[in-house]
Length: 392
Ligand code: MN
Ligand code: MN
Image 1 (cartoon, rainbow, N blue to C red):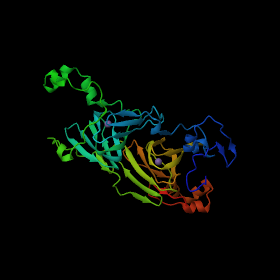
Image 2: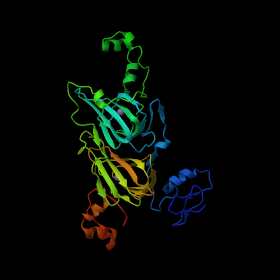
Image 3: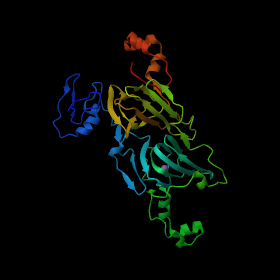
């Protein structure tokens, strides 16, 4: 078979844990999983700069339990699967047309990104003000901790990412309306609603979670007027229609409490990295970073101080994690554009660029500290964070 070097290696390509640059390593005779080795080439053949004992910072949704229901499915990545990720947990969910994530609430705030399709979400706050909105691709929603809500797919169905501000959260362990009904004495339910006990005979006998319903009518046809009005701070934000920060290597859209005021505990950035480009060396001075890769393939090295660094490969459907303040970059290693989300349990998105730090420090000090070449010193520039750049 003729080899086209512009294409990915053929499926017959068997990588070996041998580093050509220094001759370290040797062949792997097996047993082995060659497909996974190909996907995790920086794990199989770590850069010579990798060192030390950073914990695992990668988990794929493809390696999680899939909860299949009539009407849709869900899967999640929590501290059970990725123990380092204590600040945030993520759920990937898909609903068929009319499929419903039932009325429920939980002790954690819920942030969401609509990956594909559309859904109708509802909520009510503690003052009796209600919220109902249709969510399209690229939109966010945010439900503060403790407030009840529901999600129903519109025509065409939908898939979305949910992020919760607690790594121990599980979407299979929330407070659901059906579960509460099932575990309340029937005479109490009857007394609560002022109806005979026979009128609650047909309720579900346990948690429904996700179920199939009809596609709902227009939002106007479903409107419920609350005497207390609607929720003043919108639970919805259109992230993708937001004007991005445009850089030579890609784009960035940031949503945090500065432009999405209700999102007080989760800040996020939607980052686009073009082929050949990278999200430059940087860190975050406020909290850990939880990443979700939407498309393409990338590598990230996380630097943990004291000579410790570890490199991982990511692709669509993977979750990455960076502990608080550790240095990192994200480099597009494929032929397609990388789109990924970075999330922080924080009110604001904060980012420190290595390049900018150096540019804004007395240059003589920077030069002597690193024995920096004139080329390196000349490359320093004052930048507006965050920056996705092409290597020069
Ligand atoms: Mn929820
Ligand atoms: Mn980052």
